[in-house]
Amino acid sequence: MSVGNVRYLRMEPSVKSQSDIDGVVDPSLLAHRLLNLSGRVEQHTYSRKLRLSSIAGVCVRERLIGLRRSITAEIRVPLGLRVTFDSGTGIHDFMQNTNAYFGDKRLGWWRCRACGHRQFGTKPKEKCPKCNALKSAFVYSEHSLKLPEDIPVSGHPDMFVNVGPGDIRIADFKSINGDEFDRLSSPKAEHAIQVVGYMKYIGLDDTLPIRVNTERGLVIYVSKKHTVKKLPFKAFHVVKSPVFIKLIENKVELFKRGLDDETFLPDPETVCVGSKFSCWTAKECPVLSWCIGAYR
Image 1 (cartoon, rainbow, N blue to C red):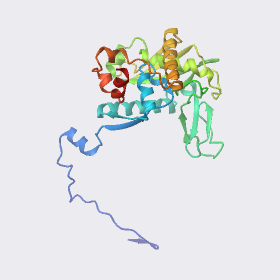
Image 2 (image 1 turned 120 degrees about the vertical axis):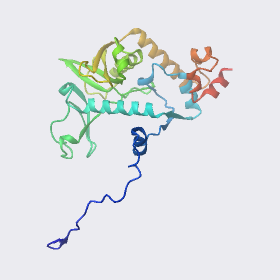
Image 3 (image 1 turned 90 degrees about the vertical axis):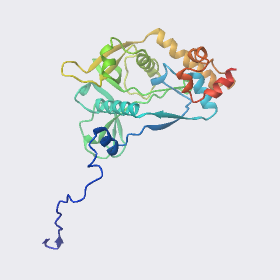
Image 4 (image 1 turned 180 degrees about the horizontal axis):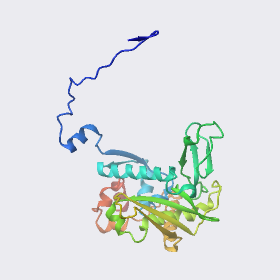
């Protein structure tokens, strides 16, 4: 068929050839054929900074050994854990970028995907002032702590929430399975420690254009098991606990001492010594052989 100088080809539907998946009727096998269901291997290098997101359980000895020996750790992530991590990332992204839950209570950096321009505040309601891209081009960009060089700490709070006049709080999101969510009556210690760490150090960051509450923060849990009868959110206050502050300070001081003095190593973790380095923590440690050698 021709229209003017343009010729169109008539495409007839064809069902003559059968795909090799059409004979697969088992739903699990079909998913296996269609999707990439393998685990993954992540490579991690050791940094000269401790991340607040993992500081509660960090082994300072491992970090120092890995850093000094320039070790690249290979972390195997099985399929189930991969799906858990990926779905958690998706929930974080949705909570940060949609107006559906926090609306204009959200504060943070917004990055234009068209030109890279960043601005701080609520979600932009106008076009990008630099390149004129639509407001939909803006995505939430977490604030990365910028601390003095003598503080070997890094972190990026999930969000800042304006809970009232002059009261802006750090909020961190955690997605967890439904059974664990149902049992929650307080924030998990490692999550509270993370937020306490943000509150401790954020006052030293002069790149943040707002003043935040450094005494009280929030941990917000999202259940991965939703029912119409139960609210899938739980929010908990986090106060600046002296116990948590001391734990953070001790780990940072040990790490800093090891950075300044290459002959210093803190003792191995109690659980590793108590099990004669046969516990799961020791077996999964990327620097195990060097740790044992230095200890003995």
